[in-house]
Length: 269
Image 1: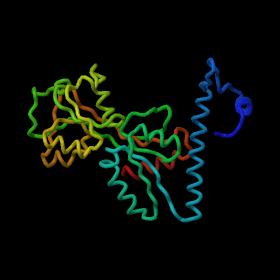
Image 2: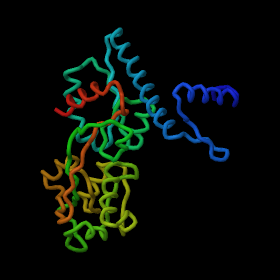
Image 3: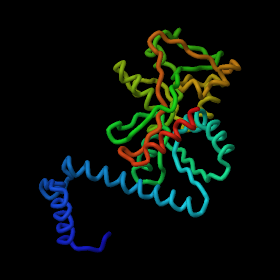
């Protein structure tokens, strides 16, 4: 891709290793691997590269008088926890150009690594050794059903629901991941659910639940109106009282940490 020969690659590797005074690559058979020092250097260089992109953008903003905000959100966070705050921000900052990407947690982490977005607000698990983060909000995670749903057996614990039809988000979503880890903590898995439906849309899941098609596990903030109006009810379980953080994440060690923290404080007012 670089249009250089293999010996030239070796010379570059030797130069970088001599410059930093550490071994960055190791050979195992015919395969080349990054050492622990190589992995650390790679992560730092990616952060520096992404900081450079943001710095260039901010310098151009000073010249052109325009501001840009590029960030990502997971589906639940974007639709139910960030939208109102973003509307307030835009009313107070009408000259800002905004790009908000809605993807699952894993995709957003990749977008941050490659520098296509500056930060993300996620509900899923992430590598806290790779990203700096701060809590955006704390949300209750609950089981819900239609008030007319007929249970096979009176539910008292999570395991009592495994025989019901359960409406799930797609693999990779934060909402799905929380549910999977809840099952794992009780020595169960998704495979133990007898009847399941996977849907990538929260609104479709809510509609199916309200029609009595099945039960589902969602963040309370996503069904607040439906609970208030009685179209859905909370399933009270003795062994299930889960609160999970929505976190803002960005590249670890970024020189723009203060900027991200200020944006977090602004959006989470």
